[in-house]
Amino acid sequence: MKVLLTGIDGYIGSQLGQVLLERNYDMVGMDTEFFTSGNLYDGIKKKPKVIYKDIRNITEKDLQGFDAIIHLAELSNDPLGQINPEVTYDINYHGTIKMAKKAKKVGIRKFIYFSSCSVYGASDQIASEISPTNPLTPYAKSKVLNEKVLSRMADDNFSPTFLRNATAYGPSPRMRFDLAINNLCGLAWTTGKITMESDGTPWRPFVHILDICEAAICTLEAPIENVHNEIFNVGDIHGNYQIRDIAQIISRIMPTCEITLNKNAVDKRNYKVDFTKINSRLPGFSCKRTVKSGIKELFDLFKKIDLQKDTFLSKDYTRLKQIEYLKKNNEINDDLFWKS
Image 1 (tube, rainbow, N blue to C red):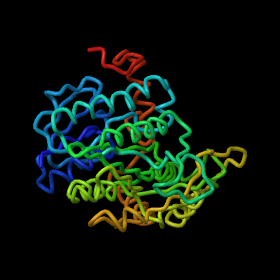
Image 2 (cartoon, rainbow, N blue to C red):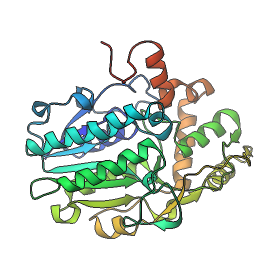
Image 3 (cartoon, rainbow, N blue to C red):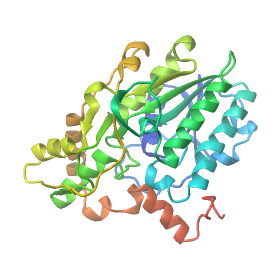
């Protein structure tokens, strides 16, 4: 099976690319190179072939010969998506759908779309795949739009699958310290404090980056009838936590760490997620890692590489900072196209 992995130089993509190569997939990556300036550690052992191109510029010729696409290449979080909502929709929605239509036209059958549990937005109920969506940001709204359009495109020749990932955590060469657990661990390690921006009460589902990779592999390998036009929440029921509980786990591993909550700030994104479907209906899938083991893994890495505060705060590991840097230095324009 020949696989195109878009967003290969990102946080998840850099790990997933290595997993695909280790399992001997004929894999080619695609990336626009916004986030290649940082390598937190030497984790890219096998150098993949990569097409360097913005997804908005993908042609049918680029897609010829592939059997499957795993699509990650979108603006990847809420703060980044809110810089300019119109550009967010242009990349994350219009860019994705245009690419999918070209993929279908050239005969690519499997299209694995990385969606997000953030589509549930705010809910007092435990959300399953059939629950109403309530996206609160351009990032999450784009995910819902894509799911709807891609689902309508499904037929005997084009089979989309939607992986609604919980909030990722864990080490990656292209690290992101703007993700909740990664950020709190980095704060604890470099400052001895966990200063939280909210009161810590919101519920959020979490999943280790390598369990996300495993979900993608299982989807690739599953019989088409098991995954055709299906939505899977990616995670485990034991991965639902209040943010303040994450801080407490960190403080138990680092007892000298001080926790500060912002009791006057409430994060509206609050939801718990049911993961029964993926664990019962996606052949071979189960989460093998826990939040506690993932936090220990992060601290082990920080110790090994001697993580310093300036590295933790670097633009290289925070998506919004990196995009702002590229714009300020006139390397990309307001529509987030490279100028040269």
